Amino acid sequence: MSTLDYRKGLYDLGSGCHSWMLPDGSWGWSNSGLITGSGTSLMVDTLFDLALTREMLAGIAPVTDEFPLATLVNTHSDGDHVFGNELLAERDVEIIASAAAAELMTQDAVDALASIKRREDVLGEFARAIFGPFEFEGITATGPDRTFEGELSLDVGGREVQLIQVGPAHTPGDTLVLVPDARILYAGDILFIGGTPIAWAGPIDRWINACDRILDMEVDQIVPGHGPITDKSGVDGMREYLVFVDAEARKRFEDGVGVDDAIASIDLGKWAEMPEHGRLAQNVLNVYQQLDPSLPRPDRLTVLTRIAALEGFTAPSDEKVGN
Image (cartoon, rainbow, N blue to C red; front, top):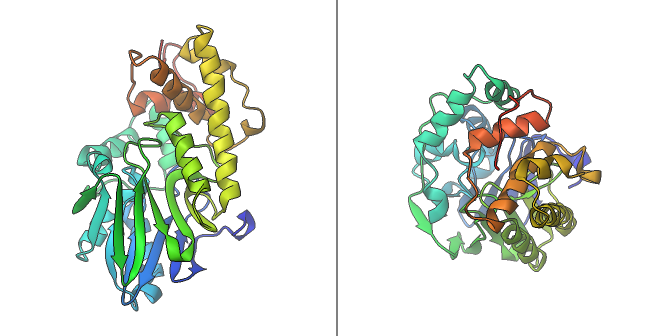
């Protein structure tokens, strides 16, 4: 599927596999997947709020009426992939995630996002700009019924679906969902197409290794966590960005440049106009933290404030992400 085909709704990928796409793929606008077997189906990720998830469940009903949902796999812990879980739990669907992802699927995570939209500061302004369409009030955090570490093979109506943990990378518990007989991969947020990736957990070199692992797979279609369906060329493109940021950050660290000055001095070149380019702040900080584990690890709210500043929102002059 090219970017020109990228529209909201259900896509038939062939071989009993589908995706539910949410353009434009920016903050919160994520993708889900649906894998069918004999008389059953497995969903890959829910969406950022209950309304979006209900809409998706209604939209995929022509498939799930024939292949009832029995299993949900969450590729990682971020809200735009798990906040709709309670609607699947109500249907007695078994929820599976990596153990590392499960630890972060908490009510505190839901409440934190709801609260930042109410703030009267730069972070609140930024949160309302990027999260305005989503309703976090009233969501009940719903974690997995079953967890795993490493790899897990599932039987979905007689076909094998492989869960492969590659985190920590984007988050601590990132999981790839591979359908070998269809040569289709659901990559979660290990893959962003048309937008800037962000290494909340890292290290970035581990994320690069995850990209290499995908490139070694026998897959033809890849559903990213955000953006249009792609093939290995999309993985190559995102890998190139990660390698560039890792190298530029390492160079500045070795030269004794502080984190904030490093972020300010990196010329993103062809990536400068890519959506969410301000995520560079977290990506550079992640490299610095890998090279010097004693560096402070600011929480997401502090980092989001710096990202907001890089994307044109005015931040206080003393708002720093690191030393």
